[in-house]
Picture 1 (cartoon, rainbow, N blue to C red):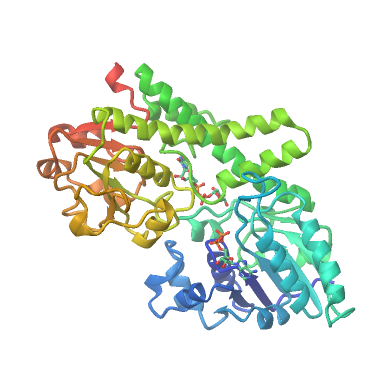
Picture 2 (cartoon, protein in one colour):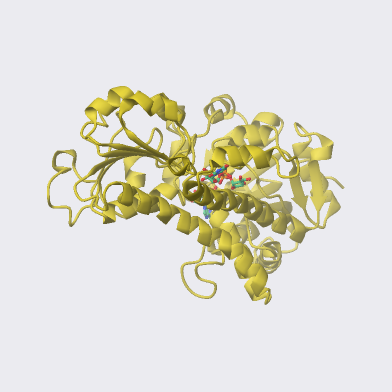
Length: 478
Ligand code: UDX
Ligand code: ADP
């Protein structure tokens, strides 16, 4: 019998869990939604009176939080209570790549998923539908099911609790998460038990049309998520590889993208050359796929997909190298402005951002970086670079050995003074309004602008006297 869901609990209040549950609460006022996390600070940030300081920045999220929070949407650290009173539990925790042991560097570390499954087994009462939301290796549902069966049996509530496991991968893209959740291309539900599938289906039916809700077996659902991300990342590596050919031949990547994107079989989306893909999913999911292939002896398939990540790494270092080359082979004591640190615009997420490696490379070459980002906090940049920020007043001293040579600035008005170069790494809209003619007067001469996102039209810099490089632009060779 289809279980009409009255209460949901989501374990993990991160970039996926927070926005996903906010939209479910908004679209289903009859369901009580609890989002729990073991991280107390994160939960208090979600409960912050000042909704401009939520832990996740997403356009449109603030409005939903204001509307639903403390009505049918609650952020809490009370994991036991929330799990035990819910009919459905979403697992939405982080699954980073393993750093040690078997599969290190490729396989996902499932320790947080395992801990979650044990919590669910221990605290659940009655019948509970467990939904995998995090991107997971294929056949993880089996692991969760085993834990639920074994730990569930051992718990005090023996014989009274039963479980079904479903896979319901999230396809939202950060920066556009609310729109993706409200108008998904598809919702995928993988599972074996028809009633459990129908219960989840009913939730999505509150705002998603019937034909967009796809049912598959559980393994297809898990593999479809990895495959979707692998295909998308492959497109980015493909176009970035062609950008390098454009720069050496006189072709222009924007023209090539337009030309190939007009072919309806290829399609025009996801063909923007950039500084290399970032984000928490692409690299991790491909490496996961590679690990899976190697495990099953499919070495050619593993090599094929690993190439997508290898190309991405190469492309990022290609950008660092060309900056050094254009600045006469040395960055020593040169002031370089980094415009954007998040892995894409409209998010404060920096995970796997191309900016991390490129900034590290430039610092290593002796550059003095001034990093700007409208949403990323300076503390996060310090964590990502593994270097403390240099204090403003000694940013240009000769002693760079102990502290990283970077400072943070959120003032675009004064940031360009004395700079040798500006590097656009994230396509934040505000960077397209910079008056380069005015800034060129404040910059060192000759100075460079490097645009890794094709954000600027070359005409805008024509009268500025600045040297200009943009990704995939071979006009110098024509
Ligand atoms: C991705 C998938 O799109 C999403 O479906 C999945 O749920 C999670 O992983 P996300 O990582 O949030 O989403 O962002 P996405 O828009 O896919 O961008 C990933 C990276 O590719 C970013 O660094 C972005 O700047 C880069 N990118 C994207 C390009 O360089 N060019 C493009 O044309 C598109
Ligand atoms: P994602 O991008 O997948 O949402 P995040 O790292 O942003 O990943 O969020 C995952 C969240 O899951 C973190 O806030 C983390 O504290 C939380 N988490 C991980 N394991 C557990 C657990 N066993 N119980 C509760 N919360 C957990």
